Length: 235
Image (cartoon, rainbow, N blue to C red):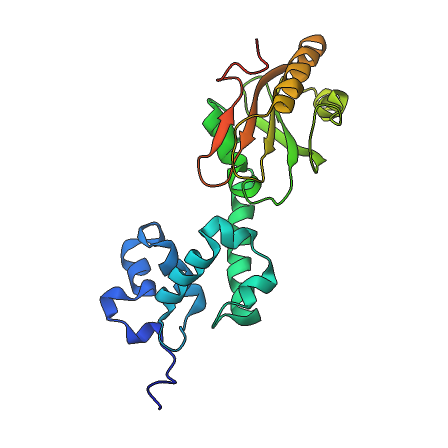
């Protein structure tokens, strides 16, 4: 009975398999996501060590993005988690999100659609509703500011093009990049996306502010569409 009720700890693993020791020896980048979660969890539950619990969490929520999107209560309700461990997981994910959004000492320069997407992918791919943001760039294509302009379902009749340029005009931006997400996870542009893009590009020409791109962010790493690359709204 004592063995059946045992809690499986990291120390029950062979030294060479323990996540903390592997991180110290190999670096965090060489650990699996489940192993990184195990370091936060510290102990497992009956029948599962911490690494196995990490694997279960990723399976139950789909992946790390799913865990990021999940409600705090849903994470708490996972077997062996509870409020304390759920808080640790959510806090770690939030730290990663904030690090990704903080501007380094040198302003990030945009050389490709992938560069722009990388700045917002982590955050926007996990949003439950649509959000439209505008990146402001200087004459060297460095991002000097990003603002949220709209939240909620977007269509061409709701979006006021002037709102997208308000901050750009005030801060004398040389160019902008428009970015919005599709909560469905599919970044395929809709007809409304094309209509919005066409209107924004035309307005940019009148204001002498170049519209470099309109990105649609999907769910998961690297899932985005550059509407300029596809010639949608930029003709």
